[in-house]
Image: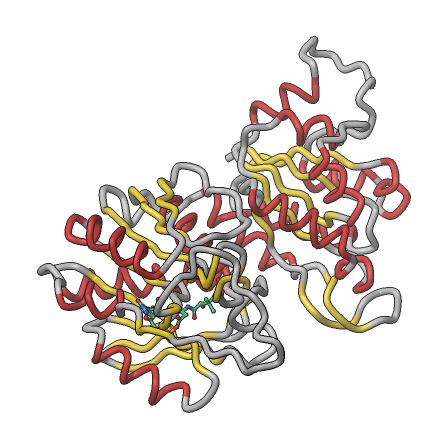
Length: 397
Ligand code: PMT
C-alpha cells in the first residue's frame, strides 16, 4: 500500500529510518516528506536510499512530472504517518497551518493520519499541546505514543517516541482495519447525568464522556451502526455515530428503553447519578439564614439492571464498574446483578484511571475469568473491550 511519511525535526528522526525500512520490508511504497529542520538531523539521502524514492522537502522544487506534488502525494496516500511528530507539527495541524511541504500535504489529505509524537515532557504536558492533541483526536487523527522514559534532553517522563516496531504495528492496524462488527447494531452510553436541584444548581459527577465516546468511535470504525446515548459533555460527535442527548438518569433510562431491544451489543460506560433531588425547586432556592439546609434525595432507576432484565437472546451486554475499594468483588456483584456478559472494572482512585483523564486502567471480567490490562489510552481500552465482545459473540454462536 501507499504510505506518505512525514519526518519532523526531533532527535527521534533517526528512528524514522527504521520505520521506513520496516514498512518497505512489509511491501509498502513509502514517500518521505521531511521538514527543513528534520534535514539537519538526518540526511534526506538516508531516507531516499531506504525508500528508493526521492524525498520531498521544498514545496517549490521542480520535478520531471507536471503534477502538483503536495496534492498528488496527499491523494495517493492510503495512510499518512508522521514520525516523529513535534509539538510544532501538532500545533500547525490543529490550526490548519500549511507553510511547508509537509503541512500543506497533510492539510490536503483525506487518508487516515497517524502521528507518533516525540518531544520533551514539558512540551508534551503543556496546556497548548494537550489541547491540540485533544482537538486532533476529536477530528479522528490517530496517535501512537508518546511513551514515558528517558528523553534525549536528559529528562525522564512522557514524550518519548514509540519504538519503530510499535509505530509499524499501529500503521498496519490502520491499513488493514478490523471490520468484525460490520452489520451489527451497537448502543453505547457515555458521560455523566445531571440532576436539577433548582433552575441554577444541579448534582452531577466528573465523567467527561471520553471512555464512552472512544468506544462509540472504535465500534463505528469496526463497521457497526452505532447509537451513543450521551449525558452533557464537551466532546465532538464521532464521525458516523448517531447521538441521543440526555440530561438526567431518568432521560437515560427512557432513551435506553426506547433503543435497547433492537441492539446486538450494549456497552454502558456512562456514570448515571444514583440519586436525584426528590423535588426540583421551580425557583432559585434561598439561603436559610445560617440554618442547615437539607436536600432530600430520591433513588434513580438502575438503567443497566433494567436493560439486563430485558436482555434479548444473543445480545451482549457490557457494563462498567467505577470503584474506590474492593474492585473485583464489587465489579463481580454488578456483573451478576445487572445480567451482564462482561463488566469493565476500573479503580477510579488510581492515577491515569477513570474520570476525566485520557487513559484508563481496567480489568475485563466475564463469567469465564478476568483479564487485567495495563494503563492504556482510552482508545486502546475501547479496542480491547471490543476484541473481548467479539470473542464472546464467537463463543455464543
Ligand atoms: O467519562 P470519562 O471521564 O471518560 O470516565 C470514564 C468512567 C470512569 C465514567 C467509566 O470508565 C466508568 O467507570 N463508567 C461507569 C461509571 C458508573 O456509574 O459506575 P457504577 O459502578 O456506579 O455503575 C455500574 C454500571 O451501572 C455502569 O455501567 C453504569 O453505567 C450503570 N448504572 C449505574 C447507575 C445507574 N443508576 N444506572 C446505571 O445504569
